[in-house]
Length: 393
Image (cartoon, rainbow, N blue to C red; front, side, top):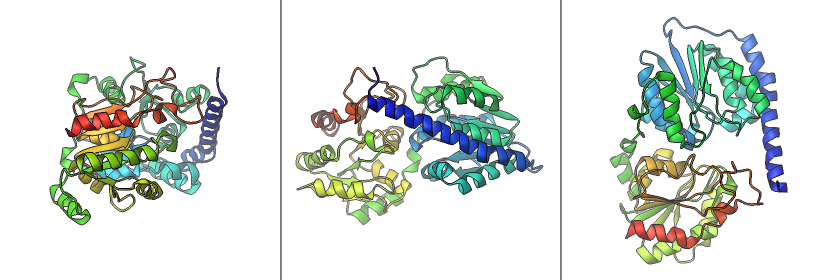
């Protein structure tokens, strides 16, 4: 039986789907009708590859994007990604052009929404590929407006789109890929997608190493600026794009104090712009240890450099957890059960530890029957300490 909290979440999702569809009708349809698709004779084969979701989802797509770039050799590759991932995409040479997709602006700012769609429309893409397994109207709208000759995407699920809207937008694609397995980790899901549209084997694909992103000279510079010694500090990432998915700050404060007392490790708090208040609040809860919060003060690349030189990364289930896996760093992450097995746990179990408390309501797709995410808040501090002790000893 659904609780009021589950019902509320479902209503919010229906309203979100409906709002996106109205925006498509008011902006997407007119842009396609009024602006002709331009074909550039100098660049006849242009391909657009994109995701409209979070940076963590993009990180799990890196190998697939690299493979697509190789298989579509001779094409001019344009990658549309989360702004925080743009520098990373450039460093990995994932596209000839990197365009930024500001998701919140696209939803809330009609002017930005319209200008980006016009840019996509006038680019004259021959092929457009949407990598979202959980399809949403945002991505389907980009596919529709592109007018590309070849428009490929997932048949996917209805986690972010209603079945009625999905049946309507299915016709925007020239090819829809269906997954063979319902329950599959996102990394393998991306491999499956590429293997189906290119007829290559999953065995030809592998997780993308990004160790080259840790730049030694820049790492030494930021360590000196913060007065840190390599391997003598811990990185802590307390934030999350969805606030309810954050483990409590009081728990993180206990971990900071324990790391200081047990291992004499300083803690550096990192995060995204807009999370500065989280860093201040967490620092204020620490009595003996004196963590350094650099939230909002350093770039994404500098955050990666700090992580790469730390003893361990302690984090929620967020983008930095995926970065830690791709860099094969010591990591302990607090994991909830909303989509357990799809995005995590994974990685090297000797170095990456996912701490969770299994409940009978796991895999609810975050349609939670509780007022808070009980599966996250019920993760005990001692369980996190146990994994940290194992890694640091």
